[in-house]
Length: 262
Image (cartoon, rainbow, N blue to C red):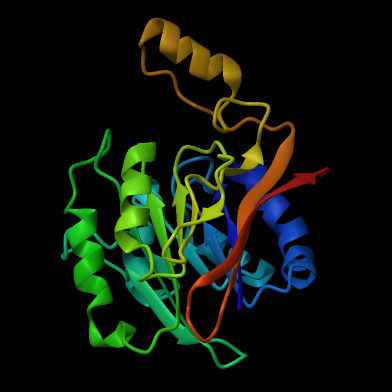
């Protein structure tokens, strides 16, 4: 099985890149499953039901939310109706929506995905290690061969620690959140594919998606400058993971950088 992971989609430029590039990439890369992080797709903050539907139309099978999933007010009522739009596993149990998606692909292989938010330099949510351990022990995961875990976290050390904690128990651990793609795609000793951060699908002539001048002004003044998405040098970032259907262990992982000339 091949999994195509599309990194954090930022604002309108990122959405346009997904609409233009994802249908072709899915075919060219032979992807059986497409996972897309959409937490910054609504002008850089959150996601709307309409944007989620556009991602599905472009070829995404499931969309993950990250720490900004709650930014758009109309998402609260929509989440319980959208089992393929996920909020983090280690959110409080009262949080609306689904944290896990499991299904059987067209090729007949069972696939499951969930994701956690890190706690280092982020909100103090439930322990992601314990949350994942309890989740993967549930009966629903017993016969799931291909397992993808997204770790939406600030600290590289926390992402890597979770990957080694899960090594051999899941097919891949892919990090998101920093919007800067790392150069460490590899397979860990137990057979789990790993990438610290998949990067960003959006304007790279920016500061992690934001107009450079605005981000610099906030750093220099420490005032609450209102951010706006940048527009130029748009790329689709992500990764492709190939997994052995029989063992559920990774065969290879490769990062993706696709320019968008929209």
